[in-house]
Every structure is written in structure tokens, then in C-alpha cells.
Image (cartoon, rainbow over all chains, first blue to last red; front, top):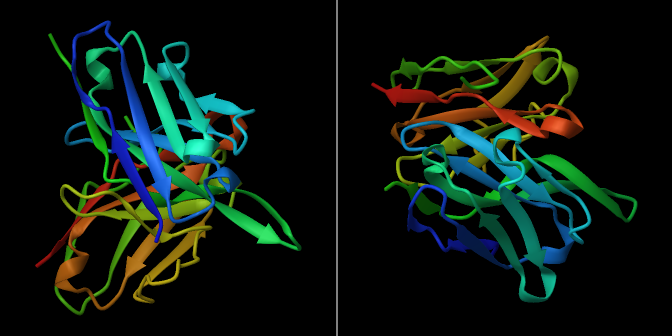
Length: 127
Length: 111
């Protein structure tokens, strides 16, 4: 069974830092792109960042570029999000999500949907 | 303001059908057949219901179907059941720079 379990959320002051973790199990973690998606209280979903299987490619939404860093440790089946210079508008539940993939003829490539999600971890940025 | 436009709410009675629209542009919905839909119950994580416009993951009832015409994608739920009451979000690939964009979400009420 695929499981994604986030941790590391909490209350932090504006300008502060926080590191989120996502522990993956039930699938070959190193074979999938992974993403962070967030949801501000009472609001919709927003894709934040994603990372290639080997960590060689990383992409971010404009609003977090230069402040957030996504990383992964395939040996530990873990995904991370280092968040620096936090702002009130970063307050949200942060979800770890596995990106789907298409496989054909022995090759697989990234699909642009999220087939499994964690339960989320709440980050509150407030003084 | 979300990149994709969804109605804020829709409603229907048990057994009826409802359709939720998702309007984007030629740079996202209209440009790619990579629209997905997610169901989210209060306090829960989103769940994939439809991907690649009209494909259903294993375990999703065939009451859920997806389609697309031009810059607008749609999710149709037929034979409404009480447990379908939830928020629904559309999502589209938007190119290598933006990756994906979401709609603002639609609250489905089963009367």
C-alpha cells in the first residue's frame, strides 16, 4: 500500500525557517517524480515544487523561488522541503504527492497528475 | 485568483447527474490532454478521480467521467450519492515552466 506521511509543520514567525519531511513507503520511491502541493486555509490547491527521480531537476512556483528548496534522499525514501524567509501567505497545509507516470515498452516517463497524497502538515506563519 | 475557473458550487439530488466545468486557456486546458480531477472531503487529502481528461484510476466508480472541449474541461458525476458531497478541483498541465495549475475548487452539495 502506498503511504506518504508528512511531518515538520508548526508555528513559525515571519522570516523564519522550517523543514518539512515526507516519508514514503509501499512503492519504489526512486522511480517517481515527487511534488509538494499546498492549500491555504479555506482556499484551493497550489502546486509548490517538484523533483525528478534522481534529484537532478527541480522546479518551483514563482512565489517560492529563491526561498524554498525541494530535495530527496532515495536511500531513506524521503522527500523534503526547506522553507526559508517564510511569509504570512505561506500559511497552508502542505501535501506531499506522488506524480503519476506512463510506462510503455519498458520505459516510463513523468505524468502530470498526482496519484497519491499524504495527509498533509500545517505550516502557520505568524508573529 | 486561480489559473483555472470553476463554479464555486453545484448541487444535485441523489440519483441525478451534475457537471462541473473547468475553464482555462490554450496554454493549459486547451493545449494539452493532461487534465486531472481531485475529490477532497473536509479535513482530508485530495484523491485522484480522473486523469488525462477522461481516464479513471482503478477503484474510482464509473459514475465519474471526464471530457474536454476547447479550453474547457468537465467532470460529470452520474447517479449522485451522499458520499459524493465534497470539494472538487481540476488541474491541468501548463507547460514546462508552470508545470501544473489548479482550479479554485467547486463545492458539490448532495441535496
